[in-house]
Amino acid sequence: MEETLINELVQGMELTKQLKNHLDPLASSPESCDFLIQKILSSYDKALSMLNLVGELHQVAGILGPSSQSSPGSENFDPDLNDQCPRDVYKKRKTLPRWTEQVSVCSETGLVTGDDGYNWRKYGQKDILGANFPRAYYRCTHRGTQGCLATKQVQRSDTNPLIFEITYRGRHTCIQTSQEIPAFASAGKEIPNQNKGHHHLGDGRKRKAHELELLSDNETGVRVKTEATGEIFPSFSFPSMPIEPESVETIIFPDSLKENNFFGIDAQEFLSPKYSESNFFSLCPVEDFGYIENLQNSDSDITEIASAPTSVTNSPIGNLDFSLDFDPNILFDTSEFFSETAERFTYLS
DNA sequence: TCCATTTGACCCCA
DNA sequence: TGGGGTCAAATGGA
Image 1 (cartoon, rainbow, N blue to C red):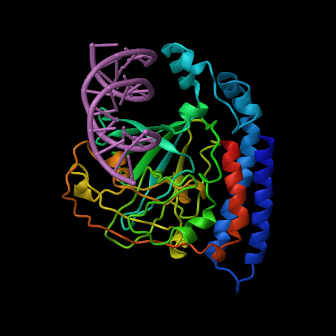
Image 2: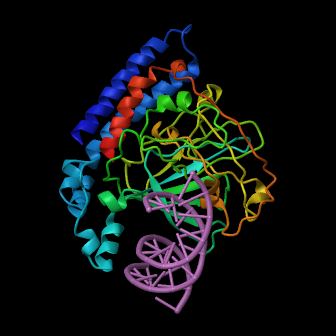
Image 3: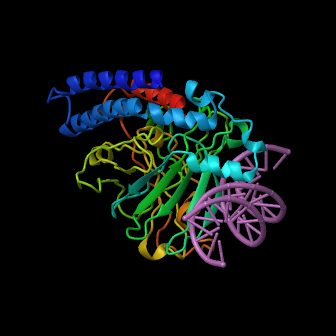
C-alpha cells in the first residue's frame, strides 16, 4: 500500500513536470495539457483514496488472509479456500469489494481493443431476466495457480447498447508478470496495424484478453463522456483500486487520444443475430493505460461478450481492419511513465 | 497436448 | 422458488 501510494505521488510529480514542459504553447497542444492535468488529478485522487481505503483493505485482508494486504501481488493464495465448503466460499466472495464501470462508445466509433492488464478467463454466460443482453462472467486466469479471486461481469446496457457495464469483484491477489503487463508505449510500436492480430505475449502464447471490442464501418474514434457532467475529457481510472465499492465510473477515450492515434486496433466481424440490427460493437475498457496495452483480438472475443449463443454470419459489419497508432512522444515520455504504471498494476494486483 | 470457450447443470440466496 | 452466479464436462483452436 505504501509503495503504491508513493508510486501515485511520484507519478503525479512526474506528470506535473511533463505538464510544465507542455506549458510551452509551441511544444504542446491544449488537449495534451488537459490530458496531463487529468492524469495528475487522478494520481492524487487515487493516492488520497488509498489513504481512505486502509480501513477497507484491512477488512479485505481479514477475509483473504494477512498476506493479501501486507504484500499485495505476492502469494496471497488462500489455501483454505478450496477446501472450504461451498457455503463459506460464497460468503467470502460476497464480502469481496465490488465496483462497476460503464464503458461507453459513441456511434461513429470503430474498434477498440485492449484489456485491463489482467488475464481473464470466461467461465460463464447467462441470460439475465429482464435484460436484453446476456451477462458474461470472467475470473482471473491465475485463480487456480495463485488463488486470485478477482472476477468481473460484463453486460451491455439495455438502455444504451453502446454502454457496457463491467462489474469487478474482488481485487487481484495474483502476480501479473511483466510480460503480461507490457508497457503501454509498446502497444503502439510493437503492435501496429495488425490484421486479425494475434499478439504474442512473453510466454509466446496468443492471448485473448480483451473483453470488449468495438466494431464499426465508420471511421474509428472513441470518445467517452462522463454521464454525470457530459464533459469530454480524458478520464482514466484504476478499478484495481476503487475509490469505493459499488462506485460507478465511466471510461472515456478522449478525442485527443483519438487524434493522436492512440490505439493500435484490429477489427473483426461482429457476428450476432441478436445484436446485429443495431450494429453492436464490442469494446475494451481502458483502465488507465494498462488497458490499452494488450491489443489483440480473436474470433471468439466479440461473441463472448455481446453475442447470443447462436450466432449467424449475417452481420452488416464487414471485415474491418483499421488501426490507431499512438505516438507516445506527443504527450510525454511514456516509457518511464508506463513502466511505473506497470509496476503499480503489478503491485495493486 | 494444452488452454480457452461454451453451455447445461448445480448451488446459494433473497 | 426463481434468478443470479458458478462449476465442470464437452468442444474447439493453436
